[in-house]
Length: 70
Image 1 (cartoon, rainbow, N blue to C red):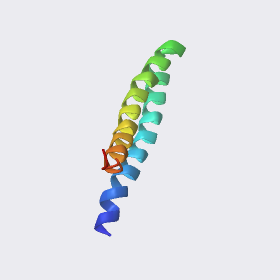
Image 2: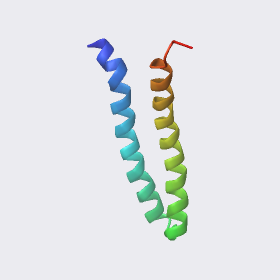
Image 3: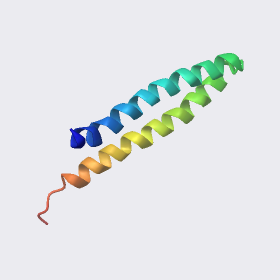
Image 4: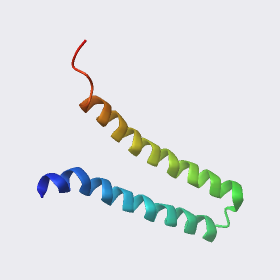
């Protein structure tokens, strides 16, 4: 159980936080009257963080499954 929680618990938890952050950015843009361009900039900033999170998993997968032969 501990191994599963370590492997997948953080991923599921961060995924849930990302969904919550999408709502937070939407609410922030709406309350501040950011307009379409401002909202797009807010979501681009959030997307860069999400992209970094996904790249971490891709790099980890590639390093763990790299062929040992050279």
